[in-house]
Length: 85
Image 1: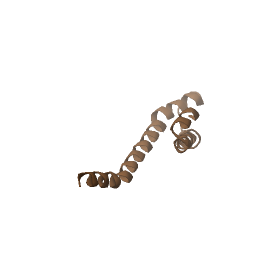
Image 2 (image 1 turned 120 degrees about the vertical axis):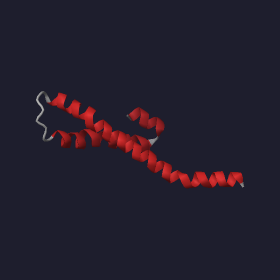
Image 3 (image 1 turned 90 degrees about the vertical axis):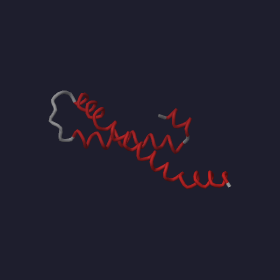
Image 4 (image 1 turned 30 degrees about the vertical axis):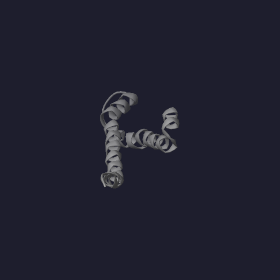
């Protein structure tokens, strides 16, 4: 995460770090708090991570993509309109 954050910029790297911390230290404990599945804690954490936390992260990425598209729509339309004029 640090290497990729360095390559793409500090704000993206910090977003990745916050996302990782949210997934592992906030969301995963909440989702595993009342689980009655047998097995080790490691198996439970990995199962919940694969089944729920990854999809949460994918949803956040999707929302961020739509938000970015909405934010850049006006400048893109203005640029195309000025290029046509």
